[in-house]
Length: 357
Ligand code: SF4
Image (cartoon, rainbow, N blue to C red; front, top):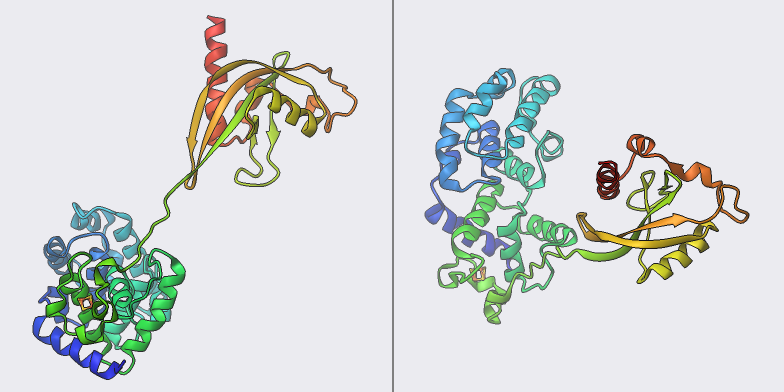
């Protein structure tokens, strides 16, 4: 690919067809920062009014750093995701204390500021300071996939890293501000997710996906949100008026206490597994209910049974003294127990309460 011509075509097009937006009339890093943070989860048209009002009220870093928090939040009211503005004020105070109130002028320092990620750092450093840092977001990932006709899944971090290198190669020796903003506008208006307007595309002659008629199947963007379903038998095991709990030594719930559970298909298999693990004999005698707990990548289906420990406190062959693993309801309350197993505790409590009534 002739990168020079690609850059020229894109930048010429941007100069003529680029969107006229309020933050495009400045090179003030503070103003660009405000616009980029607002644009993170908000439509361009909505941002325009907020941006103008925000800058009129808080025109620079010092005023933002010193502003009353309520006043800052009032200016943000309706934009949502209030953490963004809280981080902005923290970053403004960071700039005052660490950079004497002057916005840092390079990517490496900018990305250290609170609430600023790679995209925003690239946008500010390229637009305000002319650094050759290509912006990577959904728009530019899509364009690059199509230009190079690549099948990489853009939902993956490793693809973002690879494409960052492609972008940095494409931006090299161009006007970084114009180039990045050209790519932003190309993605927003021409190289759209569905039905890209290839006939109006300034870089169409470079587009390998278009040449092979594959632009509509790219990019590959498969978000693996599927959760794994895990099915357990979870036993509320009692010995007299105490409950048997274990402390997890590893895994997802390391150091937290919980009831014993196994991925087994029958109460008999549970009893065997339990005996193998603890050297104790148990008998499950009643099915209670299924308790579901959703983690970020898995769902636990806990089929809760009531059971009793048949052995005495000094059972030969037990892996640990039984008395050290038995807890009253009051003692259970004080133990660190995972939320999933707290649901089982709540069931225990409810059952005990209804028995006492
Ligand atoms: S030719 Fe079409 S698919 Fe290729 S970059 Fe341009 S708009 Fe996107």
